[in-house]
Length: 327
Image 1 (spheres, one colour):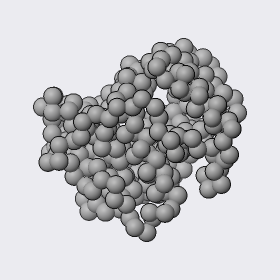
Image 2 (image 1 turned 180 degrees about the horizontal axis):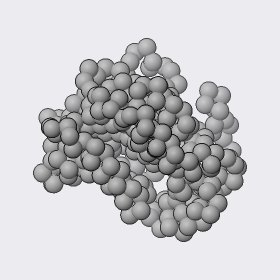
Image 3 (image 1 turned 90 degrees about the vertical axis):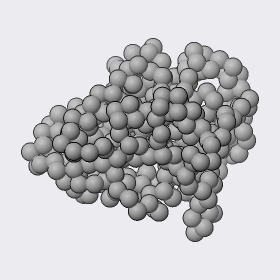
């Protein structure tokens, strides 16, 4: 896989702030497809770290930021009877889009991420705001497999579509949520109803975003797309691989089965507090169009473990009926 051009990596996270063993995966999976996806994510996010916070809509868009804050308000209201500081895990927390909001609420936060460059950004931002999150440089899969602790909140934001087996990760994470705790996921694409149209719409969305937020990458981006058009499909992954991002964005086009995420959580004893789909778009113009055509959609899930009653679950399912209607 070739490198994305013109990327300057930020400073490393100070050794004393970093936990885990960077780059070390389970020996049994070193040659597996999953390990290759992990490696691609490490390379991809190390490359784009210095522009992530100004380019990615989930980190910059006021509309999406408000969704995060409201969802944390929902979780915080239900944690009010906890009687202690909530202990939270931000999986794939990167530069701190969610973690910093949790820290601002006084919560204890562990952030695990495969990219040291992204954690370096978070370390610097957290220090400047007087916070001290625990930073773990590891793949999510390795951390969840090896960790022996439980949390009050486990969260994924714009993460599940980067994972080779997101359902197994959701299942593992669910077992590590304390009774009365919460699972939260947001900013992942749903499985498209019209894949070809969705892919074309997404290409237009990316172009608009590049012109607005990352104009220096417009020509290189077009060059990469042309190169991809003349590249053979990889036989293992059934896609054309030109850059690390082509593998790191593993389910960006195929989407994540949100109904399966909900099913797994319910089997693990969670009540669904909120499950919703909403129109996505990296720019306001694209999102405006998408509110009508619904070609690009994100989903979110807030689920509470064990302490949610059957009545609450049924009520939440009623509230999310528009989701079912859109399927």
